[in-house]
Length: 338
Ligand code: TXA
Ligand code: MG
Image (cartoon, rainbow, N blue to C red; front, side, top):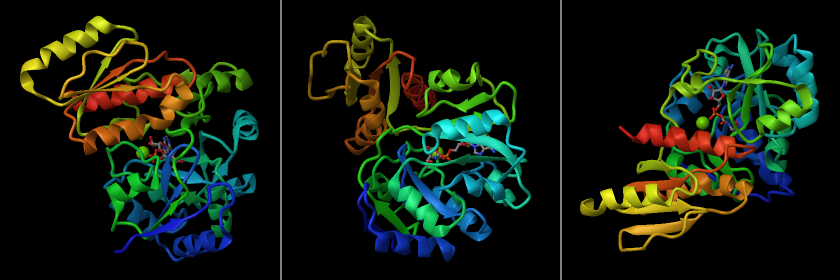
C-alpha cells in the first residue's frame, strides 16, 4: 500500500484536501490526521472492516478499545445512552478539547470499537482539520494515536510515517500538534468519576467544574482502563528519571555509566549542565510545562533516531499538565527498565 501525504493548512483546512481524506474514510480506508493532542489514525466508527485495519496497522491488541471522535454533540445520540449530568456538564465546558468521556454505549457501536465493553470512549477534538474531516464523514471516527503499538505517540506527520508508512492510506499533514500528550480519559459512568488516563486536560480543571474526581491508582490493573495494561510510550532507549533539582543523582547515574561507553541524552530544566562529552548530550527542557509536554514525545523519538542508549530526564512538578508528563515518563521508564 502506498501512503499519501496530504499537506493541509492547520487553521484553514483546504476543503478539497479534506474531501479527499473523507472519501477514503467513507470507502473503508484508514487516514491519520492531527488533533490538538497527538496525531490519530482514523476510520469510520461504524465500519467493522475499517476498524480491523486500524488494529492491524498499529499492531494493537484487539482487547484495547478505541476512542470515537465527534464533530457535534448530536453525534452522541448514535453512540451513547443515559449520559449522566456530569458528562453533559463536562462536554459543554471542555469540548472541543483534550477530554475523553467514557459513557454507556448504544447497541449501534460495533463491539470491535469497544473491545466488547458496554462503554464507549468519546471526544470532540479541538483542531480545525480533525473537525472538518469528521464533519465530512458525517459520523463518529475512531482514532487511536497513530503510532505502532507501544511506541511514543506521534506529534508530527513524519512521526506517523516513521511508524506506519505503507500500512495506511494517507496522512493529513498540518504540522506539529499543540499539546503533545494524549487526552485525559474520564469514566463518568462511575460516581464520582474516575480518571483512567491522565492527559491534556489537568485534573484541577475538571474538579473546578464538577468537584472531586478520583484517579485510578497506577498499580491497579483494571479492566476499566485496558490501555494501561500494555507497554506504552516507550522509546527504544532506556529512560531513567531523576528527581527535580537532584544534581547528585544525575552525577551518580552518569558516573556509573562511565565505563560502558553508552550514548546518553540528559533532558534537564533546573539541574545545571553536567560536563558534556562525546557520549553525553544535554538538552534543556523548555521552562513552561505546556512547552515541555509539546516536545516530550519528539525528544524520545529523536533519541532513538540518534542511537541513544540512555535518556536521563529530570522530573517535573506533578501539577497541571505536569501530572500527565510525569505519567508518560514513568511508563516510558518502567517499560524500558527490564
Ligand atoms: O488524545 C487522544 O486521546 C488521542 C487522539 C488521537 O485523540 N487518541 C488516543 O487514543 O490516545 P489511544 O487509542 O491511543 O488511547 C485510548 C485510551 C486507551 O488507554 C484505551 O484503553 C482507553 O482510551 N479507552 C478507550 N475506550 C475505553 C473504554 N470504553 N473504557 C475505558 N477506557 C477506554
Ligand atoms: Mg495510544
